[in-house]
Image 1 (tube, each protein chain N blue to C red):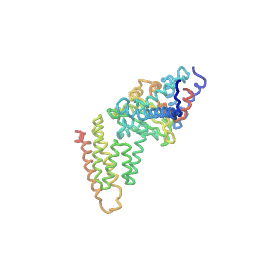
Image 2: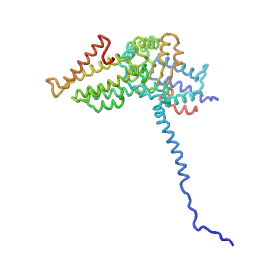
Image 3: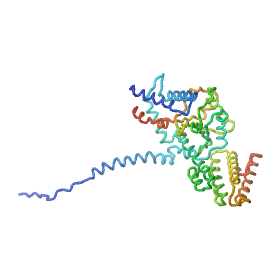
Image 4: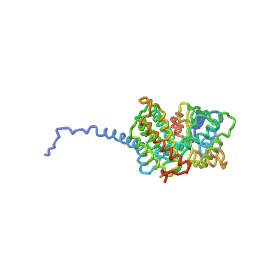
Length: 201
Length: 216
């Protein structure tokens, strides 16, 4: 006769561990993604894997003489509401020009008199000439269009080499615009159509 | 496969890009329209008079990755925010001068620590208030400029800008009335005039000879 030993007490239920794991995995995943997005680039930038942040690249004071000279390009053409900042680029002997076309400061368009459709070409020619004659050493020209509230509506950037080729008549206006870079994401965000973009995806 | 809805959305995006730019009028709008069309064609969004909406996702993803990895173009666009920081720091510096508030100039320096103009502003303010700390800020300003020269900036040009800025700034402080001693010259005014004179002498040397001991 064999005796079976019966366990008088019920085995304890393992409670909660499964649920806790289920909860922890997404939390940790989200934390990893968030830190990868916010901290990752900074670490990578610090290690030299990614490029430097803009705050570091343009940390130096504006080149006052060059900024004033390029701002004159617009004021001499009677275009109000435009400021130009020429900022030295860290680690390079070149500088970047930031042209702020600011409607909140009175900017109304490239050609307020609407009599000369070549205003844009004249501006590019003048910038190229000042860059050469005054040894400004521009690497790029970045244009920031601001609305009546002073918010950036859109922006584009062009290499100085491209500006020079356009100013010298080596490429057409169409070819010039084909090679500029437009800040797509910011412009879309400004327009508030992220949702529409999602629709396309 | 493109749907009519997708086509409509892309046309809407491109149209909005152009039409929403309320800052622009007349020829500016034509110019932007041309710019966006030429750009869209180059990016493969517009081909033979037909919009290609599928490619906008690729453009957006490349743009997004560029922002994370700090590509040259992305850094240039982020530079626009740096310009806003410059404006904010300059506004704080102006308030600091008007209100003789050292805290505000320190805030400005915190925002743009490598901007030598703000160090000059701090130095002038502290000198105005008979504080010896101004000397350290002048040294910091010189050190920042020397760093820029090491990176290839033109020494003579930069030193000239710095001295002209310094002389003008000191002149502004000298002209501010001192309510505690209206009749005579305050010690700080005397010190500022003395410093201003020495910087003017160096400037004259630069204008006359194109040289300065600072750049040797």
